[in-house]
Image (cartoon, helix red, strand yellow):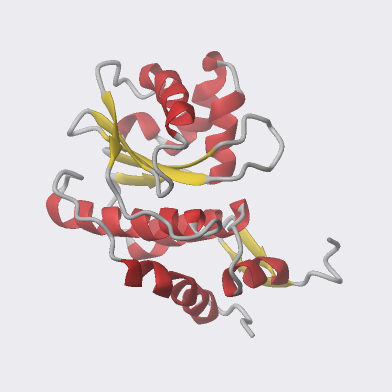
Length: 214
């Protein structure tokens, strides 16, 4: 869509949200890369800006990591100092192409202190095979060859479109836990109310940052 028919609603650091993105948040729709990128950037640059141990990787960079040769991983990870971060959040989808797409989001969290990759999937373990391939690729780049990969029990979605909202709510929930306890171990499951509220909460954040949300 051109900019005239899909005007910019908010520019926030590296993120650009358009009217069509806001509509995805307002309605019962699957979330796209732009919304997830924005919220991850908000968590890193605003809500958890005082915790330099936490790194939120955008969906675009996560997808690049999935498809580039192992020898090129440093191009994406080194500028983020990922090899020195204690906790790294990756939004994963089931798209194996370099093009935008996919049909399901899940959340992968790397905890360096606990030497483990933790996978949170709101639709059973439907993304776990993608997760395992991704983790195998990351281990050398992040200097964590002995880290385990574990699927985690978490709140399950009750429809076909809320996987992205689950990822965003879970990312915030886990980051808050890390802020307090410096680990992921002991994290409690989200309750359904947190998912129900999340779309409105994100719209309020966009509005508070100067975005025109109608």
